[in-house]
Image (cartoon, rainbow, N blue to C red; front, side):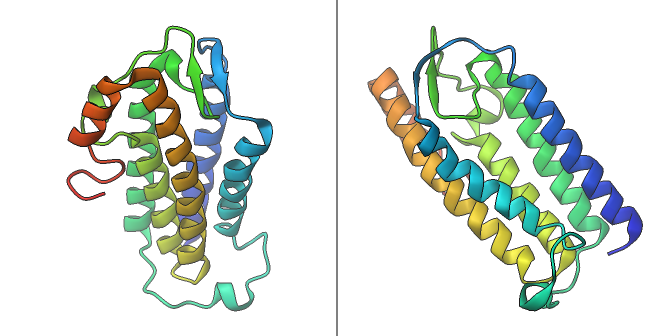
Length: 187
């Protein structure tokens, strides 16, 4: 990986994290919210997975062993595309969004924009960003970090689906049957 690729990924991830923190402020009040312990059970693995993708801060060891061709700028570009998809989804969901699993006051079931394609487009984009950042490195951690992220998001997604089903009943069930969770027409 070149210094330019390294710097570009660092700027992209830092910018995304900063934007996500700012966007957390203007949302609707919560009506129902997962516990702090529940939130930590997906946020901590996601943070650990992201930390794994920065080998200059962690000792390489076996996880730093190159096992795949490095994707280079293609990986950076695809990671960026995942982030753009997340931003699109976050913009469309508007004030219904929360970093924790919640139901907001006057919560709306959003089915437009990227939510026409998948039920959880923010997770789709985030997983793409993890995967292609990891594949840019070409080492084991580039596979392990996205797997950790997937497990954390899968757990969060299942809880979110339970909340949404309870809130929207048949309307959510119809949406769920019509729209895949993460990958259009596949998963």
